[in-house]
Image (tube, rainbow, N blue to C red; front, side, top):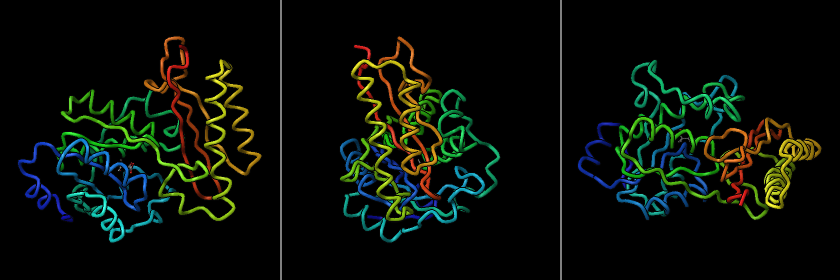
Length: 280
Ligand code: PAF
């Protein structure tokens, strides 16, 4: 596996590679990321991963500084997973001039849910992903469903800018108790780690109730939020949404997603569950 830190090296190595499958990451990789590499391998070659903690997508007071940087260990995991090439630029390489030109995703996708609590986050994500796409020029790019809103923003970025890239969505990997794998799980203390699995349980309870015919979505979400607060969570939101528009469900919605985000101590966690054809 080759590791490059500059755009020039990356371009020289990738020149002429037509079938590149790309997995953008911020590093501190876990089994969920490894599953995305394995998925990428089924869709193209070479497989390129990027490792870049993107300052543009962190707000003031968020965890940009403390986000774990573990390049050596990450490269070992990527090599073992069969990744061919790693692009690990520093901030100066990624942003050689101030990034005054930014991508503004549609407000209907990006200003609600996490976007309501992390102003500018999805603009930062879309901007760096567009830059990474231009540098790597993949045919396929793989994103995890764990960041469901991010996935929808990227799918729309590709659609509206006619980027010749297929976006492949990877399923969320979970710990034995159901907690979605996340680099931020490492921040959790022992008690918080136990509390953390409740988010997934509450989302699953909403999904089960909807599948069973319950249609009072607001009551379901409020009940889940109340349970989580009782279990020590500070909740940003629990919402049931149309999985395509991320807006509240309508009678025309065919796929739903229940999403939640909240805090345990200083750690913000997110999760979601998709519901197949709830109105059939
Ligand atoms: O999901 C992430 O790790 C990041 O948001 C991404 C897509 C690598 C952009 O920085």
